[in-house]
Image 1: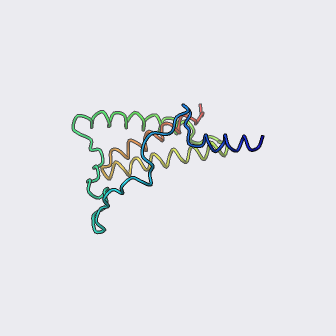
Image 2: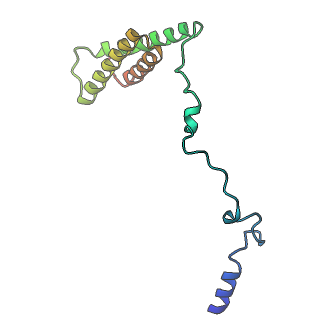
Length: 133
């Protein structure tokens, strides 16, 4: 019985799921492709990096309106919590919202609209978890 399993096991080793031998050339017998010279630049250095997205004159008003809406929503939520006694996790969230708003202002001062919009969006999303009424 063991001999039968051994014969069947080794005889089927090269068969695929369809019962035929695999088609193609073994990797070992394929020629090696030509290698680049050692002093050649890396492939990623050949392609110039894509510049950061520049807000065009058409997109700038849209970005500014989203930024203003996000900032206003975050400031409004934070102001509802001013002077109130907060739980520790609420205090942490409140402080994080204020820090994101400060980062928004700093990015605007540098002229980095994309980063300012990102900070404002994060501040708004975080401010939604502040439930100060």
